[in-house]
Image 1 (cartoon, protein in one colour):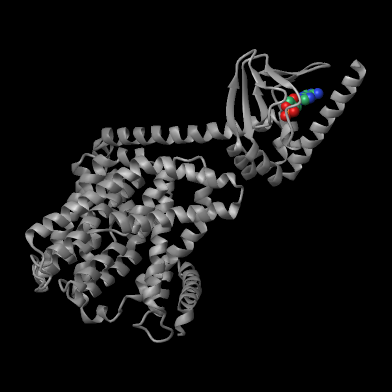
Image 2 (tube, rainbow, N blue to C red):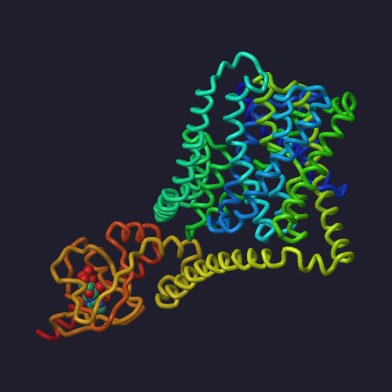
Length: 572
Ligand code: CMP
């Protein structure tokens, strides 16, 4: 392959192969992602034929993870994350510990050292974000209580892995690798720095992000350029993901997730979600391709028992642990089964951990192969696990109806209630915004010619202002600083020839802006008034972006001038 076009050929061949294999998988009643994995195996170095650049594919798949996590964040508010913390935090931590122990147990069976066992166990203990989200999406569970818990659980796992990735090199010597030369003090220092960085990241995400990101988005949306908006959404997502990885040492995925969460507070989050969705879909396909590419199918023949053991830990061990934790925390079995099924797979983090383990000479190459085999098989089998969980739930309901009904009922109801309150608050905010827009159109028929997005953009240009009866809003002879739309109340235009009343739905202050000259009359509020003001700069944007509106306003200004001239003449 020409190295100059490696990127293009990797993307092109991956998309083509994924599309074909995805379609074939669908025809065989298999989920398309099995097709993508298979396409990856075909393009990988372990099968004959075309070999794509696996390094590039890996990086591109990272883009998929970033965009996907960003998308989840967009639909996930910070309060929802807090609502599930009582189950997600202990659940994820205990599951990581127990699943790691299982991994260590299996690896000691292979005769590996404790270092290899720790890396192997940790790799098996974390689930893949991409796989979980696809599974939840397919079953329409992303917004359910179980879906929220599963995603929250995954976020905690993700945070734990950030620590693990930092600690691993530091602990490598203790765990049996040679030559890393890190002392105890150095280790404590590394840990403290990491914790500080994660804390700094959390503070940024909680306090600075929600102020800066929605503001930035509004600023861009006000320009009215659609492509600039889409670009900025992606820039914010990828920029925050990359920036947080560089500065705070957290994973790309976590950075992107929080970029989405802070953006979800904005009224523009729906547009941001719609804009980033196509890319999200395309790049998450590359994730599966790259998993397939790294997979060496010969391991299935070389080490069938080890593969089965690994798979059993991922699918059975982790599910049983997750279910046990959920039940012990007194949440219902249905929720436990969904979480268990969703997390009974491994993916991106496991590869990163395994890669690091090999480079630190902690994990034998064989361990990495087993992890890849475990990933590909557990991802492929995941739909079956979900089906089995569903089956189990039904059986439990039939066999122990009373227990199923009672166990965890209170906590589940409380969680559902909390999530519902949060959801309703979000919906109310959306509804209020939509109503404001609707009211705007009803009050000002002038705007009815605009499409939905243009109305949204126009709305962003307005600044609300109020006035009390008797207050002079515009003074004759002043320079024109803005144009006013009367939302409620009434004003009087004071002309030498007499007063002209203007009510809700009318506008004024356009003449000076159009002519670039001075105000032609005093305008005084005669009631409590609510205005929407277009400042001079925004008026110019408004006029150039919506020529139809500009000509309507110009016509009105001309009529008013003519009227004033003729009234003046009549007076004289
Ligand atoms: P401007 O000259 O910027 O400031 C005073 C405003 O009064 C003017 O823009 C018009 O919007 C408004 N105005 C002037 N004459 C009339 C009129 N005859 N009828 C209604 N509004 C008017």
